[in-house]
Image (cartoon, rainbow, N blue to C red; front, side, top):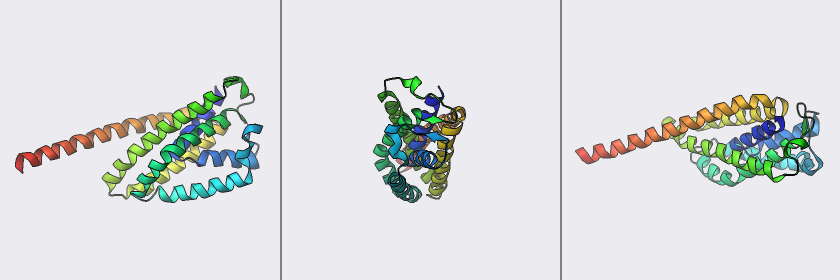
Length: 206
């Protein structure tokens, strides 16, 4: 099951930032022995691939920290992050790492399963991220956008590294993401009730 946790952690990381898990895998595979990508995923560690991912990451890091621009970026990333999550899960779950010696034994011949699972996981995490940002911007006047974005980037890096080096700890990080999802839902419901109450008050005294 460790390969499943590796793939899950990388896919969840892609839901926060599409490029960090792929770049992390590529760099570690190219320059360390922490992960050995199978031949079908060797392109992830290619020099050109790493360069392109680094450029896209730089653009994402800047865009995600500017209020309003971050919302447009999240709309665009609705297609990118799930795709990256599918790729990250597929590559990570089929790779040899410091904790997984026989990655092919888990999914067998059903190679589409990890990619589909990665897409679903990344899409769910992306949904929570996208829903939370308007709440953060509204409650902080936009000042919380760079702070929230930086925290998400750091979380994505930590999740990616843990997924490869110590995948058991991914469960703890996933617990934090579930808590964040619950917080976002409750906060949005509270803001909706406050808006409805404000409208009713204006109608009553208007």
